[in-house]
Length: 260
Image (cartoon, rainbow, N blue to C red; front, side):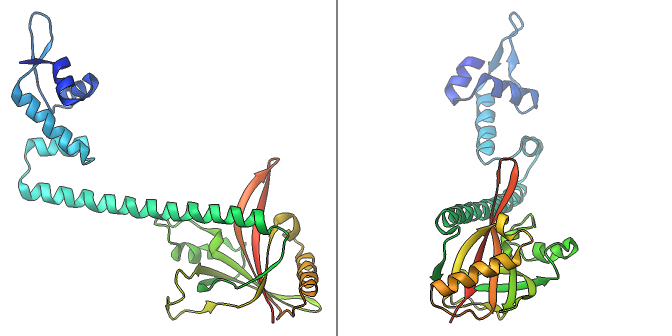
C-alpha cells in the first residue's frame, strides 16, 4: 500500500488532484483507521493512470465517470469521435482567429505607411458576396453574417465595401456590398468580382470621412493631378481598423480609386 504523497510523486500529480479524483468517485483508497491517512493499492494506482490517460485527451470528468461505470469499446470509439469533432471545430476557430490577427496586424502596418499618402498600386480582387441598401440599415446585416468566415457569425465590417461613383460635379451615388478578398487569382466562384489595375491608393481616417464626402473627393482629385493620371469616377472604400484616442473612436478606411 502507498500513501498519497508517494502516489503523487510516482505519477507526477498533485495531492489536490488525487483528492479531487476521490471526491468525484473515480478512485477509492482505503483509510487508515488510526490516523485517517489514505492508502492506495496498485489497483488504485492503475485507476489513476487510466484517469490521467483520459484527462490528457481532455475528456471531461463527467465522461470519465460514465466510462468508469460501464463503457464498451464501441462506446469509447463514439466518445472519442465526438471529442475529435469538437477539437476539429476548435482548431478551425483558432485558425480563423490567427488569420484575423494577422490581417489586423497587416492593416495596422498599412495604416502607418499609407495614412494620408497616395500611391499607385494594383487593387486586390474582391468577390462580391451580397449587397445591402445602406451601412446604417442594420436589418440588412444578416447578409454580412451569412457570408462571414467566422463560425460565430459575427459581423465583420472589413467585409463591407462602399462603392462611390462621382464626376466633376461631385458624388453621384453609393453602393454597399459584402466582399471577400480573393485568396488566389485562380479562385473562380462565378460571382461578381471587383478588380482594377492601377489605382490611387490611400488610407483616410474618420476625421476626414465623417459626413464629408466632398472633402475626400477633393483630396483624390488633387492626388490625380499630382500623379498626372485620370480618374474613371469610382472609389472603393472599406473600414480596415478602428481604435480609440483620448476616449474617442477613430476609424481608418482604405480607399482604392481606379485610374487610366
